[in-house]
Amino acid sequence: MRMKLNKSGQLALAAAASLLVAGLITACGTLTVDFVYVACSKAAGPDNYGEIDVFEVNSESGRMRQIPTSPFPSGGRDPVAEAVSTDFLNLYVVNQDDNNIVQFAIGNDGKIYPQNTVNTPGVFPLATATTTANLFVLDTYQPLPTCSPAEPCSGSVAVFPIAAATGKTPGGALGSPIANGNLSYWPLTLPAKPSDVLAPTAMAVSGSALYVTAYDASTSPTTGYVFSFAIGSGGALTPANNGVPFAVGVQPSAIATDPTGKFVYVTDFIQGKINALVASPGGQLSLMAGEPFGAGDQPSAIAVDPAGGYAFVTNSLDSNITAYMLDSNSGILRPAASYPTGTQPLAVIIDPSTNHYVYTANYLDGTVSGFMLTNTNGPLITTQNSPYTANPQPTAMAAITHGGPGKK
Image 1: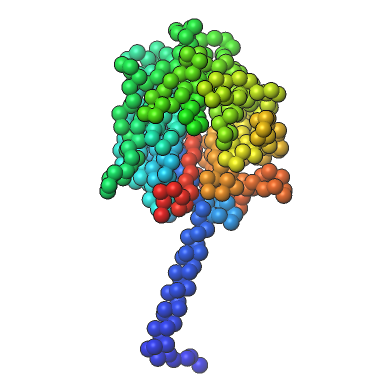
Image 2 (image 1 turned 60 degrees about the vertical axis):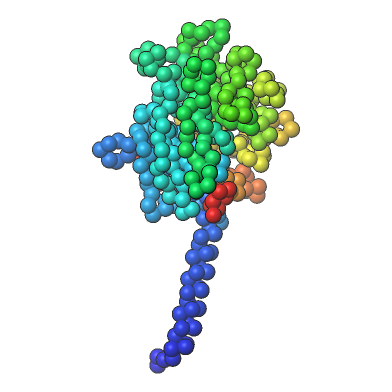
């Protein structure tokens, strides 16, 4: 027998159903805790432009899945680095082969919309970082025609102002590079050996300090360095120690700082170690007692837990990630365990919403590996359904919180 409802009953049932659906939508919405942006350097199309995969992260399991409209064109060839604005409203993508930076506006649903494109002053950009007011870009070579792949010279750092929102005009656009005398960049050179070619590798921002790693390609074996800069109120850089970098290791590959900015960690690609430094308020660096700390084969990336308790290093040749316990007083790293990833991990991030999930971008097999930080079963366990399929050759990652600063 089928029950027959009058009009009032039908309206009441429809209203109840609508509330149920709304409740389900709200519940499902709250399960997305972060959006992760994965730059992939090899696209399927004929133009060979890169792509940006956009993943949403499940708050209960850390499981990732691409949003329905993903991927998005990167706006250039060979995207190699990403950064987000501090209000999480903009994504900046560095396309190495086109020497450009593309600004994308980030929607509330995680989608990205290209806004502006600017060129870097130098050649072959490879890393980027942001503060509230500025975007920093590391170029492999200084500008043409002075330098080129055929006649290489040392790399350089450029600083772009980030426009603030005014009235109905959204912020995030990049202005012209800040002047350094008659230059639009800060060259990386050794004051005692100005003709030596320094190959830059990575950069990190901590408070009002900028750190850049490079190695002297003119020597054999090579010598690694960390350059320290103080960031002025307008974004201009002042080299610490009269521009003399701190010598460390052989070939630095990645750099990160702890949340206090007191400790600086530099992975060495050749030696398979982590060099640890102590930073003074003036930007001077000194070696930490007990360093270097062991890493795997060809460490490629490092991330430090914003809560300060852990550090994570990807080892590209071992295809794994090593978790370290970080002593907040001394800065010493103690290895906890290593965990397999996809093939050749090149990037690692910690989810910014909960600091609970860790992800690696695996270049050779086109995947993202996910891990959950836990204090009950060891530092890391694999997240649900990991690894996650990305587009070919992922190189970099960035993430925002769902509903975080600047997001509604």
